[in-house]
Length: 206
Ligand code: HEC
Image (cartoon, rainbow, N blue to C red; front, side, top):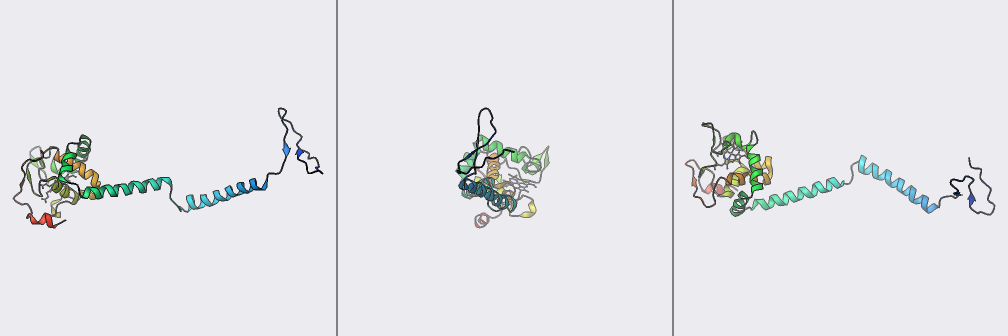
């Protein structure tokens, strides 16, 4: 295309075309520059192969997911040792109670056995679950006892009260307990039910 001028003096050759009065030299690209280009191409191939095809290394998304998972584990650990006072405080936290209510009222969840008014009945008919709005508690009426039964389920598996921790995780369990507690007053007298498991049992069974 461009007819090249011989360059006996090794001087840069001026190409013939002119665009808007601008001319250019016909220079070979410097080797160091070409080297970085080839290096970038090689890096791309290796990166594409390892990262996108073989799945080696973790993406930003995976790093973030892992960090969140670690935070959740840490939070769950903290909740293991949640106190009565902290659960009462949570029962006064409107956001937590609302979140707990949403879980409780979800079709097929707590509401279907304990009733929308927590009375354990629906339209006068008895539901499978115990009333949660009264002051008699089969498995103990302190917030941490309620928290435990919701987390771990009934010690009598034939009763149908599941271990909700597995399904909901600790945070949502704490919220749903906050919702139950919002129907109660801190310091109100609680009684145990006639068919409560012996008192030593809940303490022994961690
Ligand atoms: C399939 C029916 C069913 C569902 C769903 C259910 N429960 Fe229960 N729940 C029961 C039964 C039955 C018992 C009584 C267990 C026993 O007698 O040991 C119980 C007991 C309890 C107790 C202890 C009551 C006491 O007197 O000590 C609490 C608190 C409780 N449930 C909360 C919940 C919450 C919160 C949910 C939703 C996350 C839930 N339950 C979902 C059936 C259910």
